[in-house]
Image 1: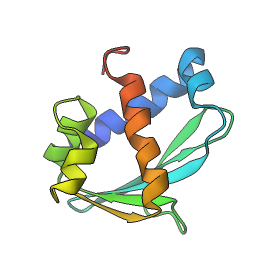
Image 2: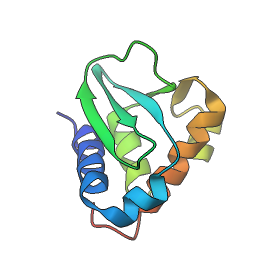
Image 3: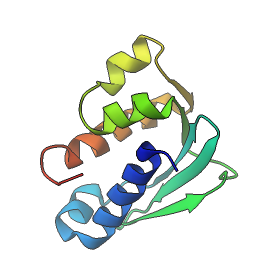
Length: 116
């Protein structure tokens, strides 16, 4: 398991155990599929502010992040900007690009506030 995958799972666990994050995330639902060099998993965000981490491929994700694990780990740690990384072709988004912008907001909610 890549460190990026472990961190994404940790973020979901943290979200499910923290009412402050749940309140900030409430109202948005969607499925973010990840393809990180052969690892395929997804996070299902629910409108109540909770999420579920699952192995495999979702039948109809909101969008899919296709990225090298090391790059995505740098995004999660705040060392790379997801918007400029996308523009520079460091990773791809497949599916609803507008909803994908929400992921940058999700990541920023964790950076600096919670120990990742």
